[in-house]
Image 1: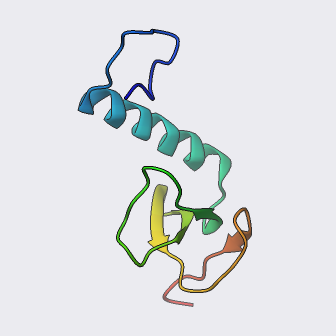
Image 2: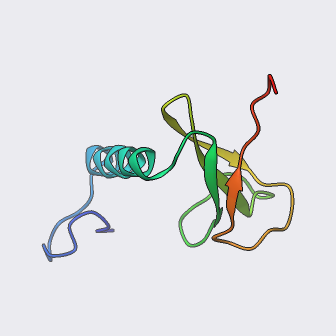
Length: 87
């Protein structure tokens, strides 16, 4: 498949292409999200973190973009404030 360079008709994505795209996107999110702020994302298409995981929370914690499964049924796009474990 060609997810990373759709403007190049004959391009076939490599694992390095996927890694680069993922790291750039994660960095972008870290610039947008404030500390402990996140958003609900529904897993669709080729996204697969396991058979029973349908939604995740993508959030910023300690200057890293983190992804955790969502156990509640919240709408995709819901903004969430994550609580510190020490709080």
